[in-house]
Image (tube, rainbow over all chains, first blue to last red; front, side, top):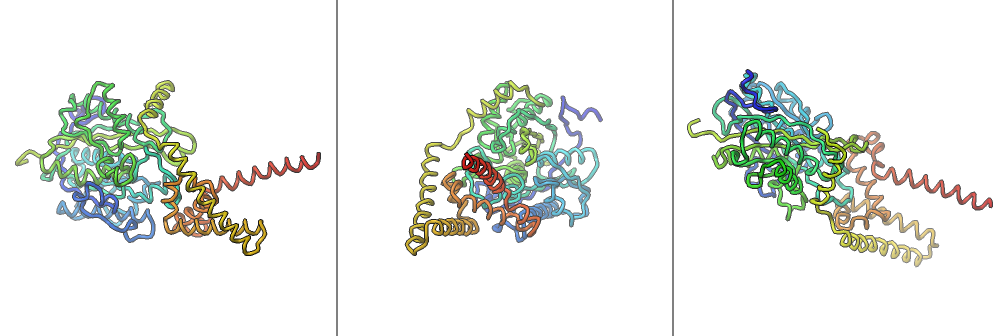
Length: 341
Length: 150
């Protein structure tokens, strides 16, 4: 099986891995953003009919999961296993949201990079023959994330310009072996990269080195140039993180300014929606991937992309204890299907 | 992959250069206007109270009480955060900022129960102010007492 390994930390999948379906559900603010036409469901109630932010986020995951399974024409019982995670402590949004589906599950924590982690593990599993149908999903919620990492929502404070806005939403994809709307052909697993930055209100700067590391490694491992991708898409670096990423990669000899797109900068209109550096959270990369990115691939507008969700590996405790904010980014190579494929 | 401390400093410096920040003079002006306005309202309440025949101390207590009540109501209506976004330290420093931090915690943690939620977490933000406020006044009290002995 060794022939699937590429370079230092990548895998070129030997067997066909298809994205059979994708589903996205977002909150009202995301629904007012530039991508509103691409989302499957836009909820007007931030509580989604629940009593707490955490329960609301669970509902998001459940809805996204059921939609993705339904769109693939499957029943939950036909899904062999799922890879899911979120931002909350002990991943409670996934646990409580997915319990009723009764599908074998691996819970993940990769901070906002979780969609990359779950797609990578799902693709590896499908390629290896561990499951015919595998569900990959994550979520985040503005209310629950603010509560988990920052202040109560009604607390009056000024957010710095480098701050990002956590996306309320969940994205889910069903992977399989045949048919579908796009295919996953490669995976680059990310390392934890720590440049020692301690500013949790400037996550783009904390995560950009990790994105740079994974993108650079992907290009090396697959012996590709940026031009070999129609898009190189990071999760939630935001505008400052984007500047830094482009600079860091230039230092390493690659100019990706033509290919780069950031989900966090795409999902909100920073000028009119007051989101400062951009959107963030697991749900940011997940919902943009499951909606906008998948539609571009299905229309064959993009032939091959590198999807690199980025995560900041901090907790309230590590921050209070004066630790830095290490970053991580996982790379997934997704390609449009050839005609007749 | 961790960096050497020299590289970390270099990166920190670089990040500082590319990260935009709020304009300090503009923020100070906004804080002065909003904070000043809150104080003007406070003074107006004191004058009114004194006009009704209350002494200065009682009038001051009425002023604090009414400002706190207003802040709590505005927090509940989600208006105070909007004023704070504009006014910054101008809304943080007066007593209304303190009230906001307590009310906001009470609302947020209500779902976790009366004891473990509101009870334990209501002073999550205001706690340090209370602790170190009382502590410094105690120290000053000791100095005051020593001063009186001399």
